[in-house]
Length: 464
Image 1 (cartoon, rainbow, N blue to C red):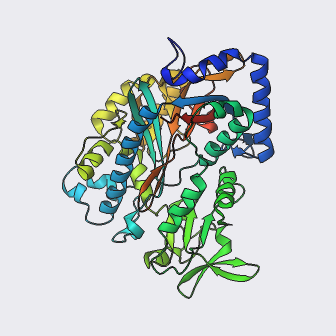
Image 2: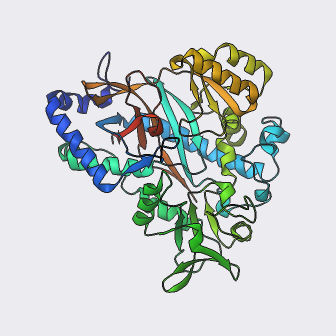
């Protein structure tokens, strides 16, 4: 456990006595106050696959997760090592493919991968950074034992919830922040702005014009898109607001056209440019990729960066870290079976009831099987999908995830959690202290995704 159980761990010593003094009624009132704040701010998300893509309030748990300064230093070292190696991997893959030549990663896994973009071959983005905004999903399984569950190098979401969770906690429990030294997170938008400015095109004159490219109000993360644009002082645009002319990217404004230098895109690769990718895309900008390759605009994160967070590639990340850094990985990978390989597939088929099986390109908890909690009918149906397309899946053991105290209907009780720290990469790597803790609000559940019934909580990094 992170906090409660056989005893209160040291980082929670600052919270335990305070929490013991709080009545259930008082905590319920505070929970209602927090919910009211989020409702007023409109912090919702869409649940796809439901009728009309229902808008729901993000469940928020008011008991913070606490990590000591020493624990965080260990995590920081591991995260930085991993992010540095993955960016080096992306540069290599789109250039000489030395790691493939060395036999450390199979050629077919790269060159036949849906996330591999031939349009990026030979192109080096500013400062050789492909993934400028990274979310690394981490789980704890022991006192000093952390595993990386997933790398998110395409368009990681959730940072707005991290920021709003902290704002809500400071409003509801100001006395706790007055008593303890908790690392701040509120400078994230400013550091994000600095990160985007640092990778502006070489020919950019004056302050770069930044824009957040959103699919629009119907996207599940639209709140975050508008929130971050507002916090950074950047423009919030849709594809129809942008156009290419005279070798530059412009946006339409009431005062005429305005040049755009850096696009923080929140749409998928294949929708970015109908001339290069999907011709039916209405979300992107015609000619954007040619302009990008000419060095006239910067796209954040770079197209093709998703190759490095492919779940089949994930199983090779320990080799990737060692190949590019010359060091053993500080953070462990979860053991992974690649269903594309006959021996692994046979094992997974025989042990479906014990494993977690995920789609290689899946996200948000969709399209996965959690064997220990699945019915026989669900396992049988999933087995058929696995047989039909084994290369689309990987499998992992169910980990004994750590738990944190959470406020439930029956009072404070342990619930399983993971952690998504956010990393910003430009001329240097900066990691926001803490990140987004996601919590499985159902007793015994290991699924923390908000789309699958999970919630979020504030994450405190104690300062020395």
